[in-house]
Length: 150
Image 1 (cartoon, rainbow, N blue to C red):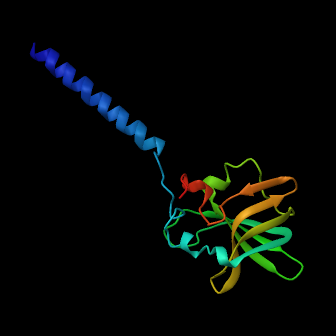
Image 2 (cartoon, rainbow, N blue to C red; image 1 turned 180 degrees about the vertical axis):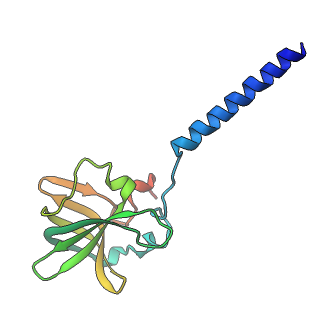
Image 3 (cartoon, one colour; image 1 turned 90 degrees about the vertical axis):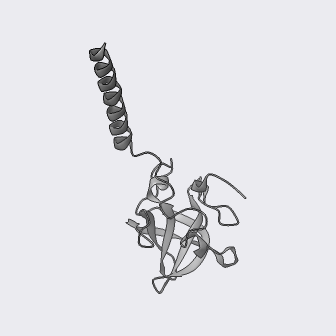
């Protein structure tokens, strides 16, 4: 009888250990990584400063806008007047979209013009590439990846 109890306890502990290791490897829910509603970065979006810029993508990079955030996708777009930084959104969201933005693409970006690190930049709400349009934020600036609406 005592041997059965010991075997049962060992089996249960093994199951718990295996399950916890499996979930630890999975990574679970990552949250917004600083890209969600109410974050300092998201509060920079201002619907009163929305502009539309058109041009050619010069670079596509990953940046971390504010220390502690997950990385995001950043473009430099060459317009007729200047090269301007464009912040699309979190890497984990942008990389899962069907439409990919690449160097050399002609794009039209609508978003909030901000000052980032002392230079003008745009937090994108919408990016048009050919016949495709990526909707990244609604008219109030709520991110598409936020998973809820007001």
